[in-house]
Image (tube, rainbow, N blue to C red; front, side, top):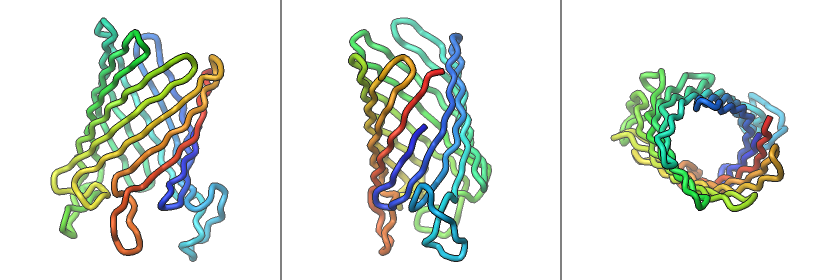
Length: 220
């Protein structure tokens, strides 16, 4: 379970996620994300754009199958599917891991993002729209020492000539995460993120958005 606050936009969201990792390498997760806009428990007024409660909801399902390769290496093909009120997103990916004996863990993923809408994303310097077919690359560098964990996740997304919400056809995102394992069941964590040029001010200028997230995981 996680709550998040976008600093420049002054909006909030929550996420509830269920995950299962089988001993044979099969992984499954299902999550629901709620957009709360200005306040987590605010009222909604369809005739007043400044009165926004819970207005956006999406559901996400991810499956993958992880295969060990020996010497701390493993690889997994997978698929993430996101359902929104307007369309469905399909995101097949391939991910690899390397675990070191000193507590450092590395992971890298390539993901192809598309959607079942032929006119989902705007072309740069044009009023025309096209289908999303973006390429996304993620790296995770994680380190665990005792009960403490930390990680850094740089992300890059690209689609030639198509706006990535930044006013450009590229997008960068950086996330720092810190966690503390209280016991075998409970692990609270905090995330700090920088989202590349996704906030647009009143003058139409793209600026970096910054997000803070606070969550906790419970092992069943």
